[in-house]
Image (cartoon, rainbow, N blue to C red):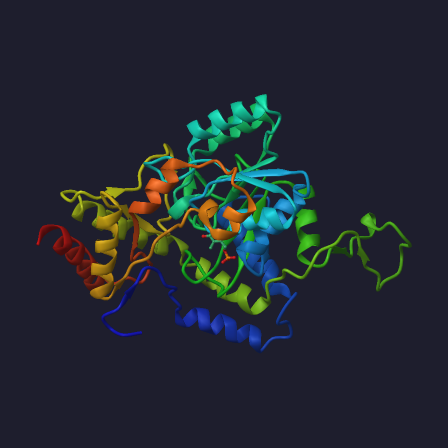
Length: 387
Ligand SMILES: *Cc1c(COP(=O)(O)O)cnc(C)c1O
């Protein structure tokens, strides 16, 4: 990477990470070994949940979590358009119908008011969702206690897309503790909070759900004799009880994740520091910053600013890129992707998501971002507005 180029996000790999990976390479198990159990145990402690299963990526984790709670043909899944396409794609791949709920203009996360209005409408037309998927955008937890209340009234299940939110807290508990959901899904892609190169996890408090998840990660196969439908007592025997694929994480990557996890709190503290610096620096500028959600502590996966309009966004984007600040935009509203436009013309329009998108820029935000580079980003943004 050129010295003067600053990406919007990147991994940080330390000597101990490399040593942990090498140790697995020299061991007997590259996959399906003790490293997976160890990483899962560490995540259970970190998330303060009953069970965690790791997988090859968060897209697979969404697919498996949805399937395990019963999403399939005839199901309806709602999420927000301000997310990566995987959140809704995984539901479509299972044969479910998908629709969208708008975001709140301040938190950039699911709007509980909009959800309530949409649920009331759906109740009248007999089209209530089976599952709602709040996305903790940029690492800021959604208003989970309110979403949970609505889930009891309108009888839907909640799966958290917590891909951005490893290390975030809500009402004093880590995201992943699943106090207000059936399951939470995490991503360990290199731009996310901790990385395994590619990887994901599902957290849940339900042993029954966790059993299904474990099975779906490995071909729908079980070795638990109490679940066998056929002959028992054969030492080599396994049974395939349902249809699935191989979504396993190898031990090589689990070792990387376990090592990364030991630095989670210093990682989050640095992100908090960076977000505070940005917030203070931009106070006098016509820039809007993500806020809201009572009781939430963000993991600051992304630092998104909102410009005053779409033209200013384009100009600022080009200006920052020309100075080597490799800003990005999160997210193009999913329901406006060509695939989704062809799929249906009936998606709820979500005006806040469209306005949000037209003004959004993600500034550099990562654990190892040096102060000099942070200063440079801040000065460059100030130059754009003040010169
Ligand atoms: C990154 C991401 C995913 C997919 O994660 P992968 O591990 O890359 O499959 C899903 N949802 C959201 C919100 C994400 O940011």
